[in-house]
Length: 85
Image (cartoon, rainbow, N blue to C red; front, side, top):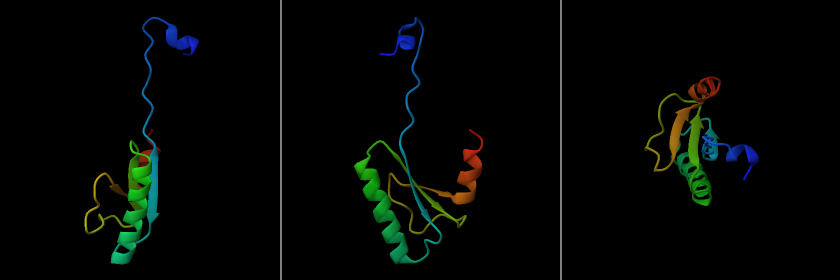
């Protein structure tokens, strides 16, 4: 334990989950959807408590919907959000 963690009233901030990012320009082709979802799902299975995120240039969600635990964001929105931290 680090000495600073021994001080009275000291609390630890839990670490953020690992972030897995898959980037795809266009998910409209079924073969592309399958490939990208398969790759991100495999990575998420290897790192169980991670946040698995698919970023696309398109501002509409991919169809069909992504299986859990995968999440989707438009790349522009994700980039703008990341500057707010």
